[in-house]
Image (cartoon, rainbow, N blue to C red; front, top):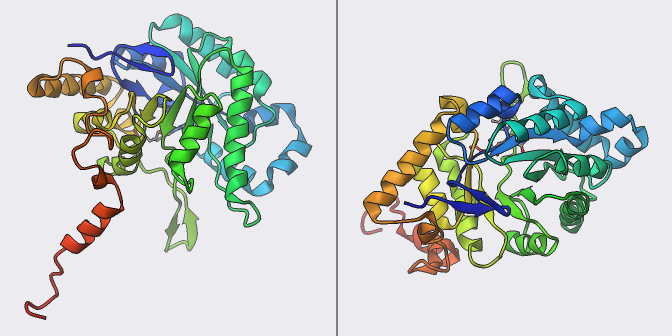
Length: 337
Ligand SMILES: Cc1cc2nc3c(=O)[nH]c(=O)nc-3n(C[C@H](O)[C@H](O)[C@H](O)COP(=O)(O)O)c2cc1C
């Protein structure tokens, strides 16, 4: 059985990739992910703010906007214990790329297109097989248009592409008003892969303390539906390889993402719950299912339930939404009324 796939120009033994997480924060952790059966590892992110801190460029921070900077800093400090400075990050990527046989993808997490391209160049020459760019940006400024947000992503991607000698993937938000069009524009701007989607962490309220309670919840399987739909709708329509992230808890989610058309399926929460060796269980579960269903290769099953190949393409669209609402039986409606 052939489980191989290609993502971001990289040949992978199978589609299960460890996405950015604290599991890749040390050389030992990266080796454990390889031993646990991951086909590739996306490193935890180096944040633009860390580079800015190094450069102590106060003017630049003012230009970024205090709000977005503060927002990302809070995320940053929440997971601060596994973050290292730019030099140590570069060193870790170098050592990891030498120590393991699977591709190591470095991750840059930014909010602006400026100030980090020299570093992206160094990173791309450090032995990393690729760079994943994560524009984790929440546009809360009422004066900022959707167009400006889109341009921010495009400028960041263009800057990373110009700086990097290795493929660049982009981890994107689901909140564009035209996701498919943006995917096409990212393709035109040279993206070597799109990761669907960034999982924005939502704060809760603590009613006893009357305070905002930011806590990090691991994902659940139901959360695959948003990326699943978009991967199914984009497969065959754009040429960029697609990676799925969010909600993979077991083999069924890996299988669904591949049937939708993903080229790689990423996982973090499941590995944090069950350990790095869970990668192997995911791959074994995929292989068992393929065997049962008579699939010889991942290539054969990829996109089999994408919108272009499924018997009823309206299943992904508005018509199905109307059918679903109409089909919902109202338990409070008296018969005959
Ligand atoms: C503890 C933790 C740390 C994370 N760190 C990063 C990070 O540094 N960079 C990044 O792009 N994503 C990061 N993520 C997001 C994951 O890579 C992934 O996209 C997200 O958790 C959804 O996948 P999952 O449902 O398999 O967990 C992190 C997630 C968790 C839970």
